[in-house]
Length: 167
Image (cartoon, rainbow, N blue to C red):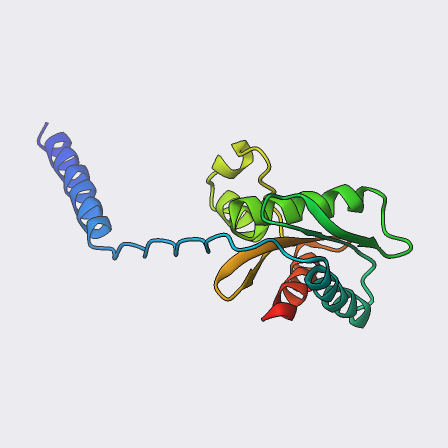
């Protein structure tokens, strides 16, 4: 009986110490707020974004679809390189729309899912993969770019190059 009591006491002490150690961990900083919406991207701006994305894809020998949307998620500009899979057209548009309406990259949703948070999978219109990036000018979101045709990191690389064209 004495051995059983000692075991129980040891387990309880370990649990209390574990809770105490967890309580002392610094809280992660709250995420920064998403950028406010600005005036919708113009066709001229969208073409400049697409040109930068196309150049990044060409430089890396990626065959991709490029979609540019305004803040509402509506398509402003689209192009698809010869040889891009047909599904890429819809995928690129979905990624761009997700980045615009949620004001965050698809990779942020992918990271949450990878960490065990399944919430993004229940959000209508959210795309939890890399390759959708908000287009922000002067601190305001004017649209989104979506890329399809490569791996998630490749799509993200090309989308980021496109979004940075207006900075």
